[in-house]
Length: 236
Image 1 (cartoon, rainbow, N blue to C red):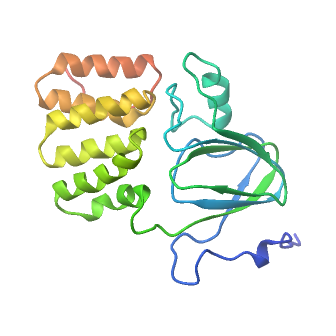
Image 2 (cartoon, one colour):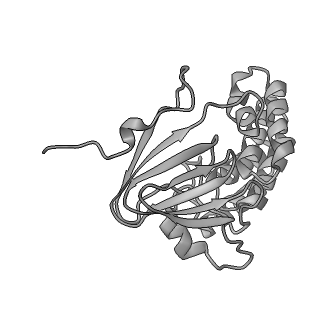
């Protein structure tokens, strides 16, 4: 086939001329395809061809009805939209060819193509002192107490991000603070009960604390909610 470069792509560049691991990325999808809710550093998306639907929640505004990592945006709209306690995305739009959409750091967002669609996406370099940077870099510290401190700085800015609490619980577990681990996982589930990791980690923490019956209840609830759990050791 004879391929041609769509207009506009050759003129795009990155945020910086210095080394940047987040290069320009092509986002290509068909009808209904896209990315479930996620967050990262600030980014822009240039729609080159087709249309794309967006749902964006401002930091701290994510609906308490939750989202699953394995649910497409289309499935999420079908299953979660309009339920009890549902809060609509802060912004919803359809991106047309030529539109440039900017998503600030820490804003949960999801997409779905409305047909064959192509976009160019670029994420900024992580800043030195932002919530996402504290979250993304905490594992660079070998000392669990330093990991906890880094994650606490992220939580101080946005205490409604369930994933911050999941990783805070992991850091506490590395320091042997299992009760704190359990507390963090419970808080993560209060913020998003559809995430599988806090169910799994809470059950493990409860078993380490000798509270096996509570652990089983946590896992049963996850199954009833349809949360996809990783392989988990059998308990008796």
